[in-house]
Image (cartoon, rainbow, N blue to C red; front, side, top):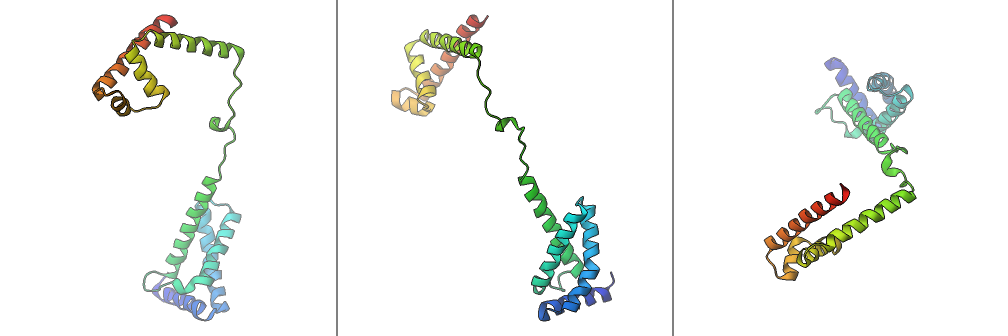
Length: 186
């Protein structure tokens, strides 16, 4: 596109902006619509999607031609920038609509069989027994941290013990539980 043609298109866009000149718009439509469609199809859009988007772009030209500034860019650049932005918006909308019904996170939990219920009950009983073997101060720290949801700092404040002592007792309790449970499983 040479400078003369750029000036001609800028004048036509100004006529659309100032006077709603249908003939000027028709000339611009006839020139840019096929080029925009071809570009959009190279962006992996179907012919129908490209035509629909070209219609939107040309509607923008009709309604917002006054926003075009010939001193900042050519009309071609302005229209293709609108096309690019609309294409990106369209892709984003399409990506947010993807809904995979087979996604495991969307599946209801499987029914638990009798064997699994018994295995879970056995495991829970072993854990309770192992916790019962712990010294009382370690058992109290575990209970506060995991059943009452208190942070180590909150436990230290409630018991009056230093934070390091609370952490050490919880770590020791885990070590003892691991040893007892490993013996039970093996």
